[in-house]
Image (cartoon, rainbow, N blue to C red; front, side, top):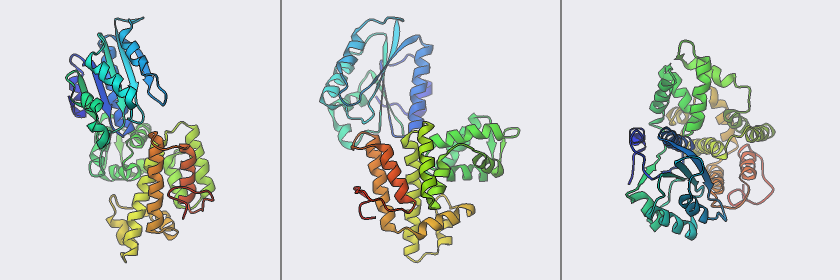
Length: 350
């Protein structure tokens, strides 16, 4: 049965279900939902843990064997099954149906997968997981742009911080749609806040004092047309272990903003007016960078870059071939104003 993500904490205070499914495309919210289930399992004596990643050529017999075998170290155990592309295939579907029909005793199975598309939701295995009597299906929904300031304020409060409205809006403007980046920004603010108070100057100092390669620096370098610098930052982010979905979110957010501004400008709307009406508004300090990027871009080019961003998303989910980091590099290169000599589905005519 379906369980609202907001109800999860209260649910986990009681007896755990044999099977949990966490589905969604926001890495932070999905990770935190899984962490909560893991913590509840540990607190209730599920001390042994096994993790399976259902990548290509995964042997689904391992799931059945894990459920049927006796625990080596504890009476209760947690089995985690991660399906990165959300497509278990015929053998996986059969294995999931078989497990769901007869869950292992003294075992909690935690399945994590991305948001299921329409066709997947109609499949027999998905229906069994969504509506199963022994299953708690947690659909994790993203926080939209209008809910983001309130989400940030709640997150600040959880960290023992209070912030002015201007500070909250600045954080939202810099991390729109990327909750993981917002959470990281709040962690930095905890170190800078005096008596737990956050104002706009504190937020600006947090961003300005970051000495490491960061996503904000990548976006600014791209907007400024500094291709070599942008590629170095991208490589630095990769070296620091930043996941591709986080970088893609930032790139796609900026592309959507620029595409909207370019379309308005081509329709005769002055840029200053478009900046002010943007959701969220483009801050004064960023307007020169955004203007510079718009001077070398058209709506058509930006829409093609958004198609390339969709291709990156498909690669991340295992739905398209190719190296994700190579495609991110290509997207960064063309976004910053350079021409890429090799063909690409979306970039070949840019």
